[in-house]
Each structure stands twice: as C-alpha cells, then as structure tokens.
Length: 164
Image (cartoon, rainbow, N blue to C red):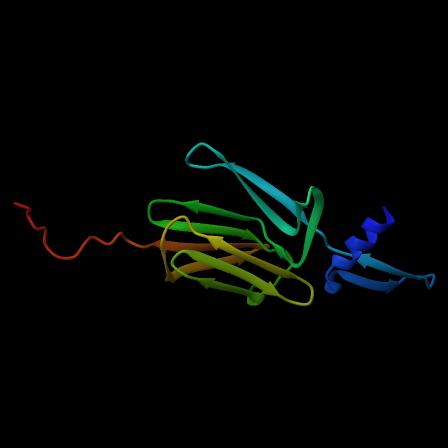
C-alpha cells in the first residue's frame, strides 16, 4: 500500500500540491482538486454515449489499475445539434469570462482556461461542419454556451451530363 501511495504521489502535477500552515503552527500538504465524473446520454442511434470529464482518468495497464492525473481539468460538455446550428454547453466554474479562450474550426471547438487558480482544457469534436466565423458565445454563472451555425451542404457545381 505504501509503495502504491508513493507511486501515486510521484504522478501528481506539482501545481496540485500545496503546503500551508495551520493556526497551531503545523504544516500540512494539500492535494487537489482531483475531479472525475461522467455523463451518459442516449445518442440519435439509440445507443448510450458516455462522456468523461475531470482531471483524473482511470485505466488499466498490464492488468493493473493505472491513474492518469493532469494539471488541467476537462470540463463537463454537452453538444446539441438542431437543423441549422450546433450548441456546445460547458461547465467552467470559478473563472472570469476574459480568461476563456475559444478556438474553432469547421469540425472542432477547443475550450481552454489557464489561470493560477483554474486550468481547463477540452477539444470538442462537432457532429457537423460549422462556420466558426459566425459563432456566438455567452458565459454566465460558470456556464459557457457556444452556438455555431452549420455550413450549408455544397451542391456540385456545373451541369449534369447525360450518359448515352
């Protein structure tokens, strides 16, 4: 058990370990925050979709449990697609809207925050091609909403040719 604890403490990013002094003069080490969670939704095909979030990712390696701890936390993200737009909703508690960086392509949206107190990072694969130049976003009460307009399907250019 002691060996496993030492191995775990070796993997913890240094930004997640803090030392403070209690009123009686003793010094304590605090670790964290460590966050892991998941959400389950039913996809359009009727199959469950599981999305993980947090900064701790459990896994297996050589038949032994393995834990990957990252400095930045992966926020909980929901993606909704309608006829004309894709809406991405992300929970980013404890940050100022000026610290949020968004970067969009026609198929992905990257959300990142890097402050001394909070670090978030998530690259979202979008369900349809979008026009990132027409994106709109709001941030209120720790919830970021990004609305992206879907690209119109391009029809082939030219005229049909009849085959004889």
